[in-house]
Image (cartoon, rainbow, N blue to C red; front, side, top):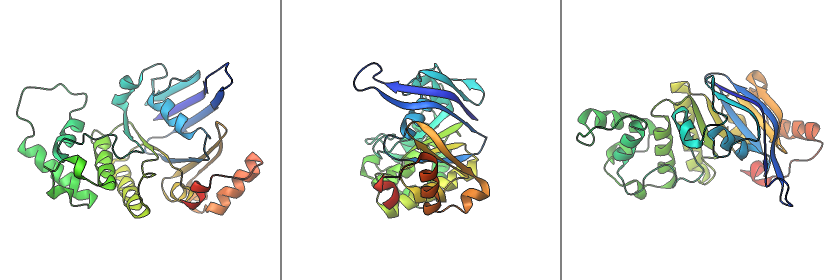
Length: 264
């Protein structure tokens, strides 16, 4: 479903601020894979996700989504393949519109818009059932403005909107980092539920080692723009934070120094 072939990205080349963010990265995700990506600050994990999304075009290499070469496509042309949830809960929803109106926008994304009444009775019933699944009581507040919701409620709604059209690839960009631990755990629970229910191929960037180990069927660790650890299956199920730190130290020859990843 996702095939990344030897991609590289350097920011500010030829200047004193030159920074190689990705260096010959290759990665393949099968249909239904849920891959978590962990790494210290500046490891390249967010650059990897943004390269897939088309936010930044890569200097070298290829990116294919469901067999389609999207390497040179701008961000808006890749949108039809992707669902994305950002770190900031305020991104991804329209604050001045109702919950049901936000869902209607997400459902009609990319479709031709006809002159007809706003939201039909059937659509309203569908949205109510979808919101029930979140377990946040939003099904009883469908006419409430999204700007009145908490950060966790908005992030859960954004997740629902991003997956409404069953994207080829779901990108989660540290989507629980701005939430308190209890709310983050709830949003991750909802994430797992939606990903498994719809068999969505997912790439989740996280700053939290425990979350990276707990969720998904595969874990990737990055350092200095490269993938240095790739663990899946039974090996991932048995993995602990200490195991991961030991492997990082063995492969990279240095100690992991991002406290927020360890304490998160």
